[in-house]
Length: 356
Image (cartoon, rainbow, N blue to C red; front, side, top):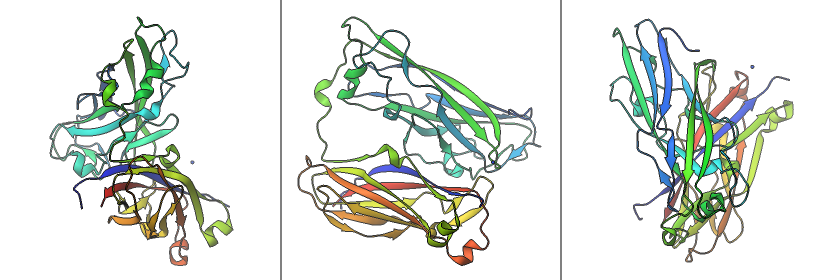
């Protein structure tokens, strides 16, 4: 087995329906370098401390457990003036956000928070949780004050697609503007505070390094945007009795130079609701389905925190696109159903492509 893996993070939400601030003791703020200059087909990668999230506490009385932090694109990524070659907004899904570090306070480390260190795709609409129900509370830990900082990086994907977003005038730079809204929630999913961060993306008339992109890698996995947030809703008595399923055709497109595996695991030990209720991962079954050019063995698995192989695929040609669908089944046993608390439960799921 080669020491190599490509990873992709999915957020799975299950909804159970009936037959819905900044504190003087804690100051929350977010700031960023704001300016992005993209000059290469290889895309853009910011410094590791491009964006800072800060919590400043001045009293030992304040404490907030199981808090969450989300980000939302407030508006589409539009040109400040003029037009580009295709007359469209810059695609949000080409932008990734990734946690990179903290200010080394022993009481607020990224690892103890439980946040993923994988890149997260910026959705074109709706919010995505950068931290979902932190395992570390925001408090001073009996000190008189505390200052916590978390750092993140922004990446813009490489590719020839960038040509479409240059100016048609060979002498004109283009500048795009967009705003990100960072929202801090308490353990009841109530808003503690919000912060808007403005960004400016500038591109010159021509890009460099064109010969280095769009060469098909030996191994790659592309994930359909419908997989970013997958929702399953229990709406009536039949749903509760028979369970709920959702199927996403062509969820994955794989290029592979050799045979390969797709593995799956949950990043949290339970499904968790904003009010702190939990459901076991065992109610979720993950099933991959061979589609166009996809051959091999698929194995339905019950979701857990352990890596499990859901597909062993065969391949010898990296230039062939191999499409695979995904199906999620959620069934609730009677012993869990009788004590079920109505609400929305979520879990983060990680998929990995491994060559054989």
